[in-house]
Length: 339
Ligand SMILES: Cc1ncc(COP(=O)(O)O)c(C=O)c1O
Image (cartoon, rainbow, N blue to C red; front, top):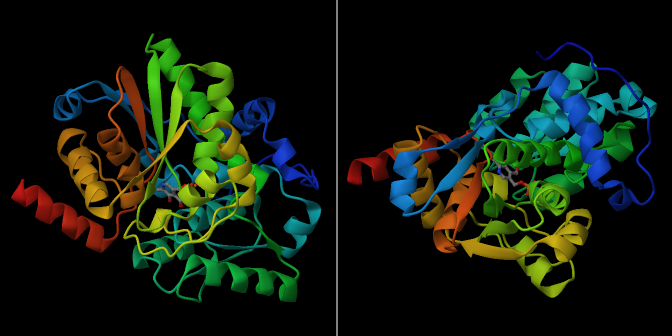
């Protein structure tokens, strides 16, 4: 429950934070995360198997508090705040789920948090952040503009800017994949591929870190919206690229590649596919009709990827978030009615 402080530690992030992204660090993060969050289920859905024409397992991160995998990052961050962060509070930027995650973590640790969101951030996500006790500032047309404002605000107020790819956040997110590969092994399920949605790339980077140790034969496939392809472009070119983000899937609406996660993905991600927003809507409809699951666009993207890039064998997708906007729910209802 928010409001209960976790064990504090004042470790400063190192000057080379990518160096902290190790499997051992994921194991240590999991020790913290599991004190606050129950494991999310990894489930088969026979109707979904039938719709896909082959078996698929769904990791249901949508059932976590805040309705998204990102809460793992906030919980881990809360236990690893520096003394300065505790004293002066946190400021970050987000289209929604990272915001809720930082707000959740700040509340756990009893520190102040301000979240700068682009004006386009869904109202439901803004309300959810406020309900967790954080201040919401709406600035800018894109996440990039919101990020600039958040950094400036941190410099003015003394609060610490929490980058969405802060290593403490990435390691927290990676615990989802520690669970996933453990659950698959316990069930005797050998995965041929795991599809992970990519915005800033924290989830996909975390998946790669864990896969390399626990399931080296499983391919990790990143999935991004073709209407926000900065991460995909960066991965392909090996340089940090920008691109417009016009996707309807708010969690995927990043306008730049992120150096820390790209450094991991460049080395370790097996494939990266782009899907269009209509395919994401179709996948959200399948999750609703065949897996009794409400997914926001970003949460349905990995299934869209699995539909676009057909793989042999058993595949896993991760339903990363349930925080569908009113528009997403209306579109879902429309397509379900039409189906
Ligand atoms: C529900 C959901 N899925 C996927 C993503 C993409 O995750 P990442 O930014 O770590 O790549 C996000 C990002 O906010 C999200 O909210």
